[in-house]
Length: 278
Image (cartoon, rainbow, N blue to C red; front, side):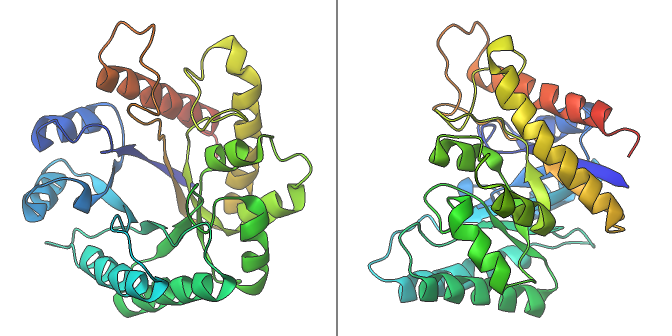
């Protein structure tokens, strides 16, 4: 089974696209994870550069506007998803979309309306849409996601454990049934290391974060095994250490975007070596 690694565009929006993509290619990534509505750029130019550097792309999205009611939010969610699915040129199209959907206070009815919207757009366009586990969204914690997965066998996740560990202030040892269910539904992983006190450690290579790294690896190992046993031809991972304020800048000598790049490349290389025989 092939593992595709994606570099986040998040944190590098200030860099011109061509040198950024050249660096991504040279670093051995398969493509980028991109929030097209997060910066001003010519989307068609970006697609042409992705083709030039033989890079794939996936999309991460969230509706950034705030609304007084979930109905208006739902309309905007559908509009944006359709626009993102239409980002195609010369056969270059998003492999999938990771959607940060809804809000943590949404009712079950409102959550299901969001999920129905994503499913409908996915069926209409042929682009898979995964639900990203994320603070501030309906999927902010394992105990909110597990019952939905039980009712919706078709639901696919982008699994980001860093949020769940932070929200729970634990490594979820007492919620393993829900974690196992999420592993079975996960199709993409955001490989950021969080811990019970925050969504991003200072540096995953430091010995004081060995436990946090081990807890993530334990779940990722199970996920890789599950995907392989399911017969998947490939799976995908985005090392997703973020820029400030996710990145604590105190005590660093390099520029924030250089430190972010170093952390993500360290994570990619670790996982690439760990799973090279899979």
